[in-house]
Length: 153
Image (cartoon, rainbow, N blue to C red; front, top):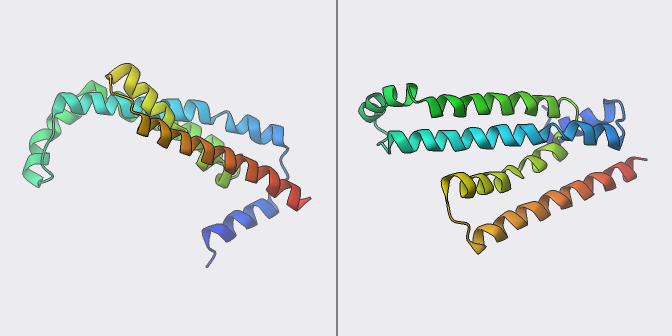
């Protein structure tokens, strides 16, 4: 049985070599994927703020289900996730998963920004440091991708 790492290695070995420009172009699809998914998350939050909290018991879930089903913000949130998924599928069909997935982590930054701008959630220095660490991690992963190409050649 192949491990995920071996599958990724085999995929790279047998895939036609893509130029950096082609990979970059496909990674641009991450912008609408991230924006659509994070905005969907924002609308889900707004919808659930209207519904209110509930216990995770069958009776409580059944009682709140009609409010969830008929809440337009929740529907918009699901539509955002579907849109984000469609763009994400476009990305992973063209770019290496080991590069695309870490870049997807930039959604943490976007959701913090959206929550601050639209929901008025506070931004603390700890939150900024955490998002900064994620950003640095994405840069390191991107640089490792360049080194991986140099090693193959």
